[in-house]
Length: 258
Ligand SMILES: NC(=O)c1ccc[n+]([C@@H]2O[C@H](COP(=O)([O-])OP(=O)(O)OC[C@H]3O[C@@H](n4cnc5c(N)ncnc54)[C@H](O)[C@@H]3O)[C@@H](O)[C@H]2O)c1
Image (cartoon, rainbow, N blue to C red; front, top):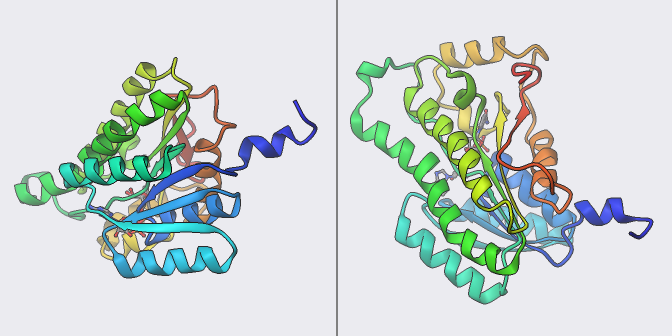
């Protein structure tokens, strides 16, 4: 080991990293931090204008980034994009999946329209599954990979009146636990992250009673910042995260201590 091996472990030099949800909030912050540590970052999102902005900010800061528009709830589009990125870059070192949305909030489960319920699960859970299915064969071939799935404290504890979101994030945590064991002998770690409320646009349409409830549960007494979440994501997606897999990391200002 060289003297600066600590830095090498968190460096992304010559690594190819896909970050979904990179047009905004946590995904944007993670893409910027990973690019600043040397990664070639492929920024993926539904929102072309937001992606352009992220990529331009990364390039201005001296980083390397490109963008791809994708709806992660479109299974064949997910498979096509990951396959073309694998062919183009010859490897995919990490997938950081931050794309997601809250769906109905402030609504009792019996009042939620089924279309709305399914759409949240299709994006937050099925999208995550399809991305994982697409990158795993590439990672297994190269005998190295890191998968980071941004779940939520809602998946561990459940917030009232946001049943579709709770369902999708709890499903994601369960998904990660099992698939991590399947890939544990291939140099691949797969982990989830459970943030409490973070100051991003996702909360703009959240019902006030739901938001107040979530903030009141945080002992630190404030919202988290996307840059704070990016730090833990950058660790989870790096070489340094080598002996933790199937785990759900916490970033909740003390709300969860398990
Ligand atoms: N902010 C919070 O309070 C909080 C808390 C816990 C978990 N999370 C999770 O963190 C992740 C990032 O959220 P954020 O707070 O940065 O929100 P955000 O709204 O700022 O960013 C989410 C991004 O995902 C993209 N997106 C949504 N649906 C998509 C789809 N079908 N395909 C591709 N891209 C899509 C959006 O365009 C947006 O750019 C989400 O999975 C969210 O559930 C957020």
